[in-house]
Image (tube, rainbow, N blue to C red):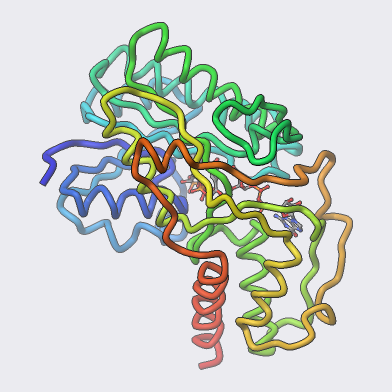
Length: 329
Ligand code: NAP
Ligand code: F7E
């Protein structure tokens, strides 16, 4: 057992919940930063099962508030800090660009400052994104590919990446960014395309919905399983030297392929009959094609994805079919 302490922002989200499970399994004391909310039970469903674990603790704080992060770090004295908190939904970043820059961009700087001042020994992981590549300059994308973000979200993540590297170089901090490509699971938020599709396919199969309203089905993404990707985050902080890594499957698929497989897994023939294109889901600037080259992560971290694209889609559809079945009574 490790005897180490970790702080995780974004603990209530998809990745935070998987990472917390991984760290608790390894014997870590885990402190999760949570925002104060008026109805705490409803927004914390992904970590409810961890609340009674003796090594799991919640600390109130907000990435917009330097004091709260300072206090959380000073009090818990973490050995490792995983900054997974963010406004993570790309379309929302056009509606709320200032908030996105503040939370997703400056939030990382606030974490770095808190560590520099109160726990300089602490290792730092920043949740970077393939959205940093945006209008891609290389195919596949590697750690050397230049950034050209296409949304306020992507711009904020580029800032967070650069300030993490700068603190590493300026203060000799052990600070890393994982440039993670899309990763999904049954815990994925309902507004992201994969979960929207698997949930709607399940609802159609059970007779609760009649069609799927969707945007650009030609966009291509490199989709992996979130449970695999949190292992790469952990491994980055166990290295001798801090560095940045691409984490991806190396495969790309169009949104339309995801839809086709999901409907097949839900037992629905003739999927195109149910799909309706809706202009409201198109973006002001699209990221057309993402596919990552994770050779460096494989060589240096010994990391490789375990769940295939087809198994990921099936896992998500099976989960959503069960959810919808339980509503039938
Ligand atoms: P997610 O499910 O949307 O979770 C986001 C988390 O951030 C939630 O716990 C949320 O808390 C928290 N948060 C939002 N605003 C905050 C604030 N002001 N202060 C503190 N916490 C705040 O995201 P995810 O899919 O797990 O992704 C984790 C991280 O990886 C994010 O930084 C995301 O941008 C990045 N990323 C994700 C992917 C992917 O494909 N999933 C790929 C690359 C990078 P509430 O519950 O209070 O809202
Ligand atoms: O969109 C297209 C959409 O919202 C994927 C975040 O975790 O991964 C995620 O960002 C694609 C886009 O994810 C709909 O236009 C079509 O091309 O699931 P998404 P994302 O924007 O790739 C990156 C790596 C992150 O870092 C982010 O935090 O699907 N698409 N129709 C649609 N997308 C949505 N959401 N809804 C649709 O109806």
